[in-house]
Image (cartoon, rainbow, N blue to C red; front, side, top):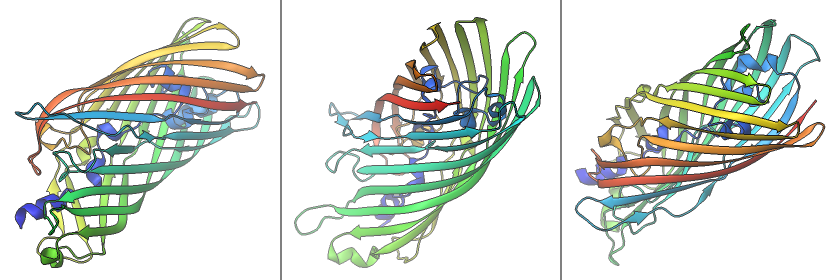
Length: 406
């Protein structure tokens, strides 16, 4: 029965969070420039990248965007020539920003609605790791009202409150066959909520270089949901169903520093560095309302580590209506090698971005971006499921947004 317990424990929704599910798609201009934005002024997405910069924005904004994401991962089991691949499903991270303040005022108010964590992974029900995961659909939506104040012509600060709404839907096979030879099935679905804050400072130096510092706090998110188990009648008593579960997930805080350089009126160059404090995710607790010898409250070690990202990008404006952008970066993995799972095939990664912006009318712009991200191949043996093999992943992300400014 112990092996059943370990496999059921793997049904915990928090396992889906890692560097691999930190979405980082919070603005099309910023995506095009390699996800930079802490030390520059682009548009209403400063509400996310640096609340301290919002008061320096020269205009008010209403803007919305979407970045459909295709996550394509493959797994090669150890000592095997087999290859298993995820289905090509499309996740839909989105953004909405509103920024408003009286003209020439020292303050601006901002509202951001965005999806900083999430994932859509479907390995199917016939692959080697089905007892670790069949499919996962995770969504988080952050709501962030923000106030920013210009202290001088060269210095502004800002801060915002964050409310997180989350949804989870997860399927996993259980290695208990019925009379027809079919595996048992576990299905978890539920919602979560959490609270946090962010703050930032923005400088304009006498030399023209701009500098930004920001902090996004951790958001401890509490989940409640339903757990359904379908197993052979002989062991049904060990899997009370329908059931409910609770769990608390420590989403990490992030520290960022960014620099904006302007070598000519046509060029903007941006560099960002991020520290993501995944090391708060040391243990995981998970509790079912109806317990049995198989289903019980547990605490599991995760031992995640801090992750770092270095980003850079540039924008070229050859004419007033058109902007061309490009960039890229490198991010380190948060999951240690023996905690990599099909929910999070985490690994160090490189990415490349490009984008274009066009002024449709005097107050209306359209911006588009594209990103290719490659997670380096990583061999692992999971400490719980003993699933052993090599993961390799590519991510393709087109995006588009409209912004009205005045």
